[in-house]
Image 1 (cartoon, chains in turn brown, red):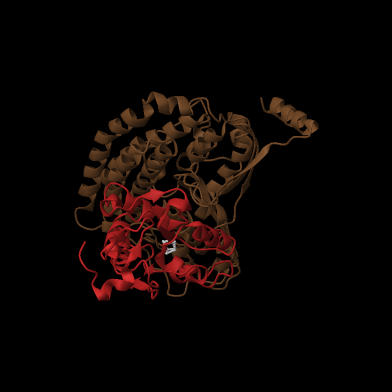
Image 2 (cartoon, rainbow over the protein chains, first blue to last red):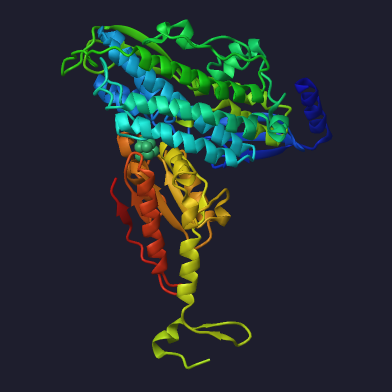
Length: 378
Length: 177
Ligand code: SF4
């Protein structure tokens, strides 16, 4: 298909005519952030796509080098701002490994609970915005109804709605508030009773399915070659989840299914996230069954200095594999920080994926990859 | 029609065809404008997520007549939600220039107000006020939806004081985070 189109493109060029160049973004209602796509069109069909990024660039990795280790943690909130806690955790883990700091059990369990609650909030945001991208604006209202409940719980423990900054090097700054676990379990029940509504609105919606099924198929080999991770990869039939393959915190002791789908199309990418909601609920229930008593942070000195060396951490964020690499030269500041942002790797597939599709499908495909520009640009 | 109050002479607008509409026109226009502030769908970063949350079911900006429009030509208010990079700045200015008058700008969050946590980054503009005139600064990182709504209500009040003839007041309002 793509080959034929390129031939056609060549024919048009030979005729002395040219395709239409259309600019999508950086201000566009359905790009998830300020992404610019330069599309070359033949009528409705996309012949070439060139993504332009960097509209949110602020030089975070460089800024990290100018700050003591712990001072960088609040900045990680603003990487992937839809799931701040995963970024906090990845950064804190890298520092902990660099400096050889142990984290108490209770803190690890609470961290797992925070991760999953944040994952639910992030996936709900995806469901809402993805529905809106395809014209199903009602979904936004339904998804945000539950998302507000999740945010209220996160706010009860961290004090913030979006930029939590609640993971510290060596543990957590404070314990769970009273009855927080009951609140989370009640929210789990509520969410389970509501996912049926999402299915009626989107999953079983014939218009939604016709817009998404068979559109933008990523075969498994391509998905691996592009370095995709997260639900985007698992929707193509590759079973790779950091929580299972390189368990961190207490994930090794938790029983959950990795959602893997076969089709690799836009619908499968949507469904993978929708099904992960239920797995997160399952994890949350286990966490509170097994929460031990004990301290929530280990002692860390006022000035945190790490011995010279290099440390690496991996976290499964709602968008995929997020990892931090930190290099220490023994001073209070890291010598070099590298962030592997899942959205950045996932975005690389877009340019080739949209070729041959209609313009309207570009929006659907882009939405289904679920990128956050804050972490693409860093 | 009665006689025209001399105080209101300056506000009389002549319509083609000879009809005269007396006084109250500011009130009518301001009533309409302040209750239908259509906002540009334009999110930059984290604060945009809170802007979406404010517009969605729980906080429901529709109550105030604030709808999000996808094109600057239909927008009255631009909510700048997020940090403004040097690369993005010309686009923001162009969007602002494309909006029809009367137009207003609300800077949401520490980043849009003054550069926020990225003040020492060389790629970040230290506040959107350097590119476009700002009417309301809403601080916070991100501001709570209540704060954003507060800022928008203050902007509505300001619009109610405007005149279609006079020059608009331009000292910005500040809402603390
Ligand atoms: S003010 Fe804070 S939340 Fe808002 S865009 Fe800036 S960093 Fe993000």
